[in-house]
Amino acid sequence: MSGRRAARTGLTVSGMTDDEPVRIRAAGGVVWRPGPDGVEVCLVHRPRYNDWSLPKGKLDAGEHPLRAAVREVAEETDVQAVPQVRLPTVRYRSEGRPKAVDYWSMRAAASGGFQPGTEVDEVRWLGVDEAVRRVSYPHDAEVIAAFAALPPVTNTVLLLRHAHAGRRGTWTGPDTGRPLDAQGWAQAYALADLVALVRPVRLLAAAARRCVQTLDPAAARLDLPIEVTGDLDEPKPGQQPDECGLAAAACLATLAAAGDPVAVCSQGKVIPGLLEHLTGRADDFTTPKGGGWLLAFAGDRLLAADRL
Image (tube, rainbow, N blue to C red; front, side, top):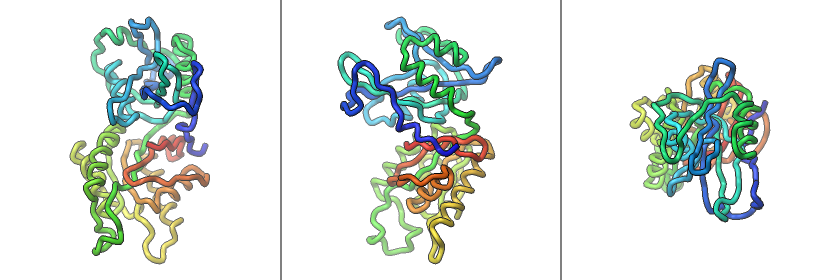
């Protein structure tokens, strides 16, 4: 199937309209693991409400929703999880205020010793059908059903566009040597948090200095080298843009098929064509500097492309 833009879907409940401003932002996940009888998902019991729900929680100030989702899952369940595909966003009223909860499917990578607390006093791993029956809210059941409808994900790739590097017209040297500016370095350090979430075993960058520098904070944090590859470069003189998109798409498909999560940093003239080739459709894949995509694959086939 072509890449799925799950971020466009949503569930609205409790009398809230789609265009109503959100006052409370939260995030969570459908955390899964292999079980003896198939996939199991994680539910939490909250004694304050006496309900069963998906693990979730409010964003900290300035926190990216994806980071919040992984953090809240860890805090409520003691499970370290790797995000894969964005699921429907749920919108409802909480204490009279409009609230939106972003969800991702997440693979359980490790777990500690869960200790019951005042917020969550029990964690259960249930088969999908049983989890749908167990949750206390219909919107949780619909999010789990959206997860169950996904093909199995075998790998994730984090695709980034380099961070801000000033203006090309004010740089006197070769464009490939143009470095990040102060804004770009701030973006690069923020991106390191997101890179760490996918637990990559490799970091790859286009040859441009700004692409390598964008991954520098993540490389230091994860103690990984940055591999430079021309397959992620922008077109050279006389080269057609579509050639670059095709080469970059083939590079990512090969990386995905290897089965180990990776993070890559490319350029603004490459990413749209790359994603068009991987998804098989023309769309607005324009990516801002310091932005990116979470890509989920089955083998070398793209299943989902979700904006960060």
